[in-house]
Structure formats: C-alpha cells, structure tokens
Image (cartoon, rainbow, N blue to C red; front, side, top):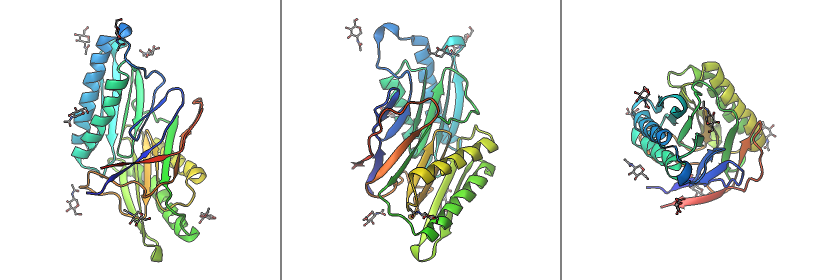
Amino acid sequence: MDKLLLWTILLIIGGFGYVNGVHYLDSECSQVQNSTIDTVYQANLRTLLLFVANNAPLQDGFSYTSVGNGSNQVYGLGWCRGDISPTACFDCLNESINIPLQDCPESKGLVIWTTLCNLRFSNKSFFGEVWTRSSSSTYGNAGLDDPSVFSRGFAMMEALAMSVPNQPTMFETSVTDVGKAGERYGLGQCSQDVSKSDCRNCLEELLVSYKTYVLNRTGWEMLGVSCGMWYDDVRFYDNTSSLTPTPNTSGGGESLYQEYIILAFVAFVMLQWIP
Ligand SMILES: *[C@@H]1O[C@H](CO)[C@@H](O)[C@H](O)[C@H]1NC(C)=O
Ligand SMILES: *[C@@H]1O[C@H](CO)[C@@H](O)[C@H](O)[C@H]1NC(C)=O
Ligand SMILES: *[C@@H]1O[C@H](CO)[C@@H](O)[C@H](O)[C@H]1NC(C)=O
Ligand SMILES: *[C@@H]1O[C@H](CO)[C@@H](O)[C@H](O)[C@H]1NC(C)=O
Ligand SMILES: *[C@@H]1O[C@H](CO)[C@@H](O)[C@H](O)[C@H]1NC(C)=O
Ligand SMILES: *[C@@H]1O[C@H](CO)[C@@H](O)[C@H](O)[C@H]1NC(C)=O
Ligand SMILES: *[C@@H]1O[C@H](CO)[C@@H](O)[C@H](O)[C@H]1NC(C)=O
C-alpha cells in the first residue's frame, strides 16, 4: 500500500493548534487542570464525541447531536469526505475526537479539519451555521498548469460549486479531459447541515481564496470547516480506498484566517511520511 502523504501545517498562534496533520482551532483548548474540571460537561462531551464518530460512518458520513442540559449541554457535528469508506470515516473521526478527549477535555468548543473528515463541537447550538472564520489550502509543489488547461480545470470546479449544493448529500465528483495534459479530477462537498445557498457561497469563497493562494497548480485542496474542494491530475477519490493521496511532493500551503482571528505566525508546510 502506498504511503500516506500527510500535510502538516505548523501554526503558532494563540488558540490554534496542530496535531499530526490535523488543523484545529480553539480559543479555550488547554491542558488538563485537575482543579477545575467540570465532570458533567466532560462526560457529556465524551458521550457526544463517541456518538458522532460511531454514527457518521453509518449515515452518509454525517452526524449531528446534542447531549446534556443547561450549562452542561454540548452540541457536536462530524462529517467525512463522501468518497471514503465507513471504516476510513470512523478512523478519521476517531482520531479527531482524541484531540479534545486527550489534549483539552475542558474545551467548550473546537473545530478540527483534515483532508478526510471534520469535527466541530460547542456549548452553543451552531447547527446550520457556516463556519467562515478559517480555512486552509495545501498544494504541494505540484507544477503550474498551462493557462488553457487551468481554465478548463477551474471551470469544472466552478461548475461543481454550483451543483454540489443540489446533491442529496452535498457531495459530488467530476472529471474533465484537458487534452494532452490528461484529465483533471475534482471533488466538492459541504457539511449537510448548511442550506443550499450557504453551501454554494462557502464553496465559492474557497475558490476566491484559491486564486490568491494556489494559483494554477495541478493539485490542491481548499479545506473549510463547512465545505471543502479537492483537485488533482490523478484520480484521488475512490469509493473503496481508505487512504487518499494528497497532492504529490513537497511544497507550500497557507492557512487563511478571516475576521477577528489574529494571524501571528504561519510556518511553512512540512511533509510527513507515515509508513
Ligand atoms: C493534579 O493536582 C495534584 C495536586 O494538586 C498535582 O500534584 C498534579 O500534578 C495535578 N495533575 C495535573 C495533571 O495537573
Ligand atoms: C437532563 O435533565 C433531566 C432532568 O433534570 C435529567 O433527568 C437528565 O438525566 C439530564 N440529562 C443529561 C444528559 O444530563
Ligand atoms: C459556553 O462556554 C463559555 C466559556 O466557558 C461561556 O462563557 C458561555 O457562557 C457558554 N455558553 C453557554 C450557552 O453555555
Ligand atoms: C479509537 O482511538 C483510540 C485512541 O487512539 C484507540 O485506542 C481505539 O482503539 C480506536 N478505536 C477503534 C475502534 O479503532
Ligand atoms: C493562470 O491561468 C489564467 C487563466 O487561464 C491565466 O490568465 C494566468 O496567467 C495563469 N497564471 C499563471 C501564474 O500561470
Ligand atoms: C465502487 O465502484 C465500483 C466500480 O467502480 C462499483 O462496482 C461499486 O458499486 C462501487 N461501490 C460503492 C459503494 O459505490
Ligand atoms: C510523485 O511525483 C514523482 C516525481 O515527481 C512521480 O515519479 C510519481 O509518479 C508521483 N506519484 C504520484 C502518485 O503521482
């Protein structure tokens, strides 16, 4: 089996963190402090996270629920990229839920986004709200496409941004022939709780960021918490594969933080090979 290529972005920013290629964001993620642990909230959070990780793989890769009452109530949502198997979906979410469970069990809210799955929870209801505060891009050192090839590939992604919201699970793949340069493969997806129009805006916003950060590369990912777009010159999506290659070889990437998030420092992307 091929090695899994994992993009890692180091973020040294108040409230941002990084674990094994996983981006996470939380203003309150802190190490365990035994004096102030709210055991009821933590127990509810644990129940919620396990529920989401166990149920999303059985429900088209999407699960949302709430556990507890009053100040101990916690809301959570998890979704997986639509092409991966239930097993890969579970493995990805199970890894994500370990971040709050192990590193910041007192956290009241956290978002985690990776190539294959997303996790979000909060002590406030957020169902149906699009997350616009952060997103990330990775592109390796995939070469630049010829402008005519690029414009065909990008047109395909723009078409996906229009049609993904109308799919029953807000997930769609696409392929386009670009002549001698081969084919370009695209995938777009939204978290199923958002409205069609919010889904489309979310995807279009990623494409706007794309133009700034990714240029005309042959392979890239633009990941948000409520939506994502993936593009490559090799067929990266597969309904049976549990490991999906991300753009080949080393290169760059950016995390994009909008609104009130203060970007203190973004280190460049490193590659990590997992045997
Ligand atoms: C928990 O509290 C005890 C006693 O105050 C202290 O010795 C211990 O180091 C603390 N553990 C953690 C993980 O903070
Ligand atoms: C919610 O509150 C009700 C009544 O106070 C209680 O019976 C129930 O166990 C609580 N549920 C949770 C998950 O805390
Ligand atoms: C959520 O947690 C934060 C931080 O502890 C607190 O300030 C806020 O009041 C809580 N919100 C709700 C709805 O419980
Ligand atoms: C989920 O992750 C935990 C912690 O890494 C691990 O111990 C456990 O075996 C995993 N569960 C499954 C069913 O793989
Ligand atoms: C990217 O493609 C566009 C449209 O095809 C073209 O106008 C632009 O010059 C290209 N940029 C680079 C850096 O190749
Ligand atoms: C996966 O793809 C194969 C052939 O490409 C097809 O026969 C099979 O039904 C697909 N499985 C799922 C779950 O879509
Ligand atoms: C990755 O890049 C190398 C050299 O650039 C190439 O030989 C190899 O086939 C590529 N692998 C994939 C999976 O595209």
